[in-house]
Each structure stands twice: as structure tokens, then as C-alpha cells.
Image (tube, rainbow, N blue to C red):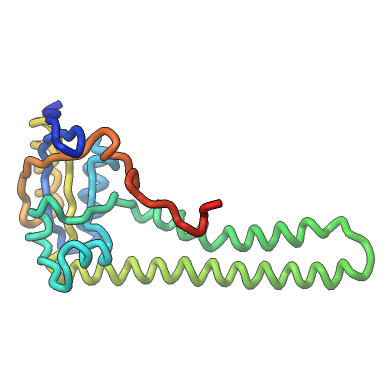
Length: 212
């Protein structure tokens, strides 16, 4: 691999190469990611723009356009999530409350007496409400995701970064990105954190309401 470790004040870091590209449609981005995955690139090799909140926290009210974001090593990023994985997560979010409510109804199935009718009715009511809330939350998240995509497209496009590590992977990544209508295709040398600094949320503060 073409990475080189170097000592920094905040720990160890690795220098590597990556490609950045801008896409002008969701379909083109997804097609490129599928081709990259088929070529052996993993989820850890791919990243996209962070959410709107992270971008505003970094750049303020005036977020740079897509090309500038792609070239900036400090641009907030997020892991690419495939549509099917997101759909499974949304389905789980909608389905878990229904399961909880249904489990409550099943738990009283062995009870006897007139109280069973009232209790079962209440449990089914809770199940319906919980299911509706789960479905509402799932739809709201999907709507928010679609709105974020639309904003990114209006700001110049969807940014994708691909870590290449060595020359053969660099050549392959560039070939795939070009074949899938990537725009503003560039190569960068970047510094990636390693050790404790690479652990997600390693410096996060716990929720004060969770303290015993």
C-alpha cells in the first residue's frame, strides 16, 4: 500500500491518495459506487458530503459549491450508505414499534376472563399508534434525505471521495469514475487519522441525562 505513517501532535496519521468527483445525478453516483464495489473498493474507501448541519458548522451560512467542497480536505464527510441499506433501516424503524405493540398483545393471549377483551383492545390500540409513529418517523427521515440530495445538486452536485492507496487502484478508480459521468475529477494526497483519533466519537461527551 502507498500509505506512509507520520507522527503528528494529535497522534499518528497516514498519508494516502484519493480521488474526488462530482456527480449531477443520484443515478450516476450510485452506478459509480456499484462499479467501484465490484472492483474491490469497500465501504471504508468511499465517503460523501456530511449533513447540512455539519457543513454549516464548518463553513457558516455560505457553504462553498460542490467543486470547492470536493477539493477541501476539511470538508465534513459521511460514509456512503447504499439505497437498499437505507431502505432496510427505514423499514426496521417503521416495523419495530409494530412488533413491540404486537408482542404486548400476544403476551396477554393466555389470560382468561372478560378483562382479556379490554386489555387486548388496548394493546392493539397501542400497537396501531406505535406503528403509525414508526412509519411517520421513517417517512420524515426519507423526506429529509431527499431534500438534502436536492440541495446538494442545486449547489453543484453530489461529491464522492474514493481512497485509492496505490497506483493500480488509483488508475481503476479514475477509469470507473470517468465511465460513470463524473465531473471535476481530481486526485489528492490526504492525511487520515489513525489510532485513537480514527475511532468514531472517541472524544464525544456522554449524555448528561444518562449519568447514574
